[in-house]
Length: 543
Image 1 (cartoon, rainbow, N blue to C red):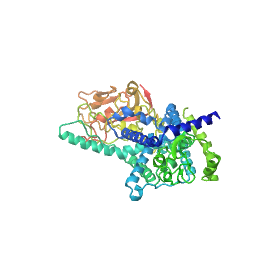
Image 2: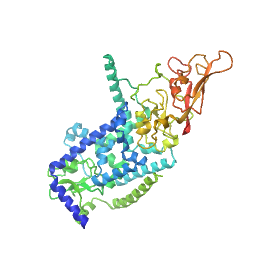
Image 3: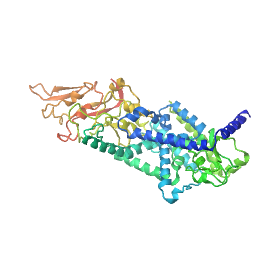
């Protein structure tokens, strides 16, 4: 009784303290924060200088699924508390894919023709409970399969519908090329004026990932253009989990029947299609706390306040919108969420311009065929990376040397692997581990990074211009930061050619030798790739 009295008092406080103007400001504040958050997260994926990652890279780590997979339980708990107090503010402010859908909805309302400009295009419909539960079940199963190592592609499959990773691929493959093109135009214009504040960047583009990103973009935009937040409330696993938590949130949009004139404008403008204007009922599992209903109600009949327990008459009205099958689904959902929580608990068990030290940059070199792929330092092993990476592409975009590229292999599709055609992995760079939000790449300090062995250099003496052609090269020896390569005569004969010899115990696999090898460039065509290349190791180790 004391709690109920306190709740009634808080409702009266909200009603008396906050007038209609104050409530309408809630939407304006939410929109401002959402725009800032979306712009900041987008810059994380398109900015090639590392400025964004260095200043607000934490935004990637407060996304729900990355925080859960990296066992950042403090962030997960904070997001749960946020939802239980304010509802699904995460979906309407923090989640980039959710805010992006709001932007598409805004475009439709303003540029979708005369009918769209009148808005009023939505209607209440019953929730797709079985479909939502199916996508959530599929997502949890794929995560569990990936964690226990039964499939190396399970995490990549789960990442297809995970909102943060899906938006990351859209940003890196669809938005970043436009950003890069604009930068290169500015670089040309600046160079014409002898100003070199801007510099050309290589295109960040990968056909396999582009296809996935384009398909995701089409699906998300179609959902948003036609049905507002249907993707969030049908496909998105985060939306489903937070939706059922928000059903018990303290603050909710509440309809005052005594003020409502039955115009149902709130229902026709609800992009989540969760307001049943006829019965004055709001489905809080789908409400994303966007405050559009408050802004559209001319009678001030909707307020954002603590919601009292429904009266018997209200419960009967809401029950009419539910079917017996839905009631059974509710019971199954509750048991599933408990199971999902148990599984989640079980989880706890380019600012620098590329150069070669003064020589001309290497161009037109092809990637060698490696028996074992090289994965970035901090990934520990290919299996560890594959069991945790959701393919958001943030590490690939943030790599200042352009070493990391999305894999095209089935087992590691879209996961980062190291290629040394555009640069090499500098021992003092720890960017990939610093920005990874899911713990697939562990953050290392420079000392650990410079002594972590991720591969071993192998020499092809038949194509080495020093060993087989007698030319004085030695690029690999000069550029090896670990001092693991020495030039030695191929024989004891006087004037014998020199060949590179790799000290495998000292080599860390950074790729400096492979990148700086002149073989495979446009001018030296003895082979289409370097005469020395790095083979990955099964498990990284300190040397």
